[in-house]
Length: 86
Image (cartoon, rainbow, N blue to C red; front, side):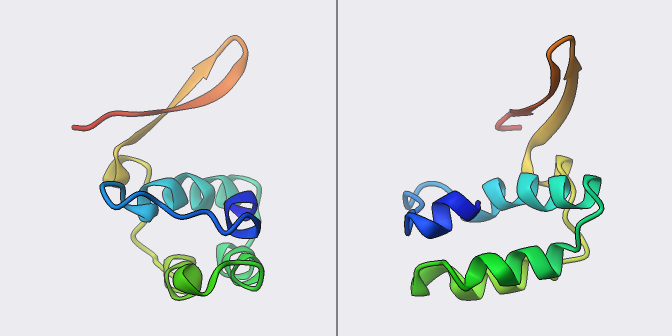
């Protein structure tokens, strides 16, 4: 997420940027980081078109991996995230 913001990454129209941000918010919580702070710090580096989305998403209390189509899978190599269309 931070890399995308620095690079002024643009999400293709057919994709919703929230899908990717859900994993980032989940990881922040797993690392005991404050998602609001993380998304605010990222927004400072982001392209103007995504700033409002970052600030709002970091404050959402309803974000879960499943709600956004993700599953956390534990493998021998570590944790991986798999997206499925439903």
